[in-house]
Image (cartoon, helix red, strand yellow):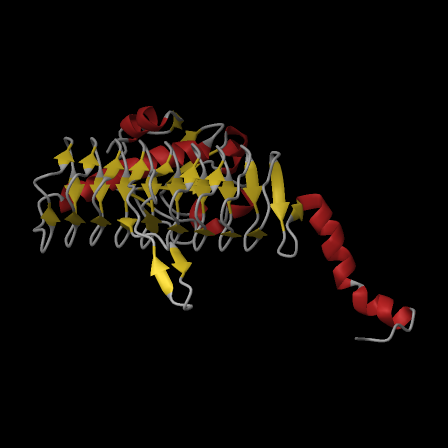
Length: 318
């Protein structure tokens, strides 16, 4: 694609030859000819990349570092880069659209919108509604009574609408399973990573609101509601009936116990365990217990000094 067309598509100012052709994106560590490299910080500008013939997507403030290169300049190059990746992702999709689909099953009792793309081994059960421009990776399973909104992407191996982990103890100490009769509702513009599991609701639906992005290997239990534009990193586990606010950012390996509610604009640091409601916006960190982020940093600082305190005051160790 010509640089002039790319600059218009991503909304960046072009400095250089508009007729030059681009065929790929490359990294700072492995620059390639006829490619575009994202450079967000001047410290990443090395002799190696300056000697390449690549085009650089960067801030206007970095312009003077590049004397003989084509430049795509933007005050927000990360957003431009996101648009740039869409160009090459669509090219990759076109190459896959006509591949054979082995062992896939799409129920006749399912409503499917236009431009539906799916890979091999996909199963879509009865009474599922799928909107427009939906893409399902290989081996995705959509169980009955699920709703998938427009522009949703679900990566390979993910299961939507699986039976939730609801059980109760019988008098003899054995477990009795509670059957889950609800569904899963995934609204528009949601991206769900690979090997995730989103359980159906017990009676009402589990709901993923619009604009949510979910990394790989995330488990969302029954009756959970995830607010708009929330981001969830890998290996997060959210227990049943939690209500997660809008624009939350949940770090990797976070565990959230059941029936927790979080406010809008909450950030939960990686590996934290959430055992109480988070009622105010802010950043929270910790395991025992979860605290306001700044309070946790003070506590953590004292924990690292406990051994010195014990020695100084000759406190008997337990």
